[in-house]
Image (cartoon, rainbow, N blue to C red):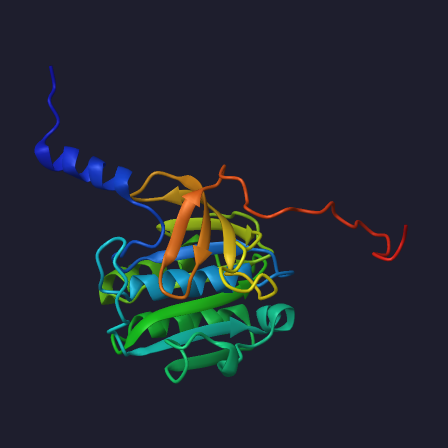
Amino acid sequence: MYVPAAHTLSRAAAAARWRPGLPEKACHSEVFASSREASGAGLALALARDALLNAAPGVVAEVEDRRSVLWVQDRAAMRLGGRPCRAGLPGWLQGRLIHVAADKPEDALFALEEGLRCRDLACVIGEIAGNPRALDFTASRRLSLAAEKHGVPLWLVRLDAAHDLSSARMRWEVAAAPSTPPRWDARAPGRPAWRAALFRARNHPSGEWTLDDDRKILAVRPASTPYPVGLAFAAGARSLAAG
């Protein structure tokens, strides 16, 4: 009878214990999201922040990596979601953001690859709309190799895009989820939350979770967990004031 090697068993056990938000080696990840909400960029920022935390699982620490963060958008992505507003960015990102506004997807891909080759960057975030011809499997492979070779992780947000061929090591489908009620003031906005499905991963099992961001670390619960808030029926196309 074949007995798996010890390192194989330990690797499988580590994969089973993995959850979103744990530190990852530099890799190329894709986040598919709708342009009608900011869930794609929001989750990419939350994952990037947690990747920069030098902490054990469940332990919150200050961000020690003070290198700059590159954020690249093509024109279509900026038209759909707008540019990053520095005043509204998380505190750990303010003062260290480098924003590149690319005219075409080809220019955005060039800027992303050049950023991944720069070890003076903590990470790279990109936003590209749709499925441009320039973002084929070859271009995706170049991004993956650059991220792994130079140790700079990439989170590429795909707005209104279909699941095409890609060499991304992790691929997410994300949508906004209802926030948990604030602890002290019920009238205040709740914490950002996402319904996130990891449908492709190289080293981890796929799965679906509800992720809550408390500005320190991602809180993870199963997607089947009921939301602790009451939900109203959708308004549809009629006016909210209609009877």
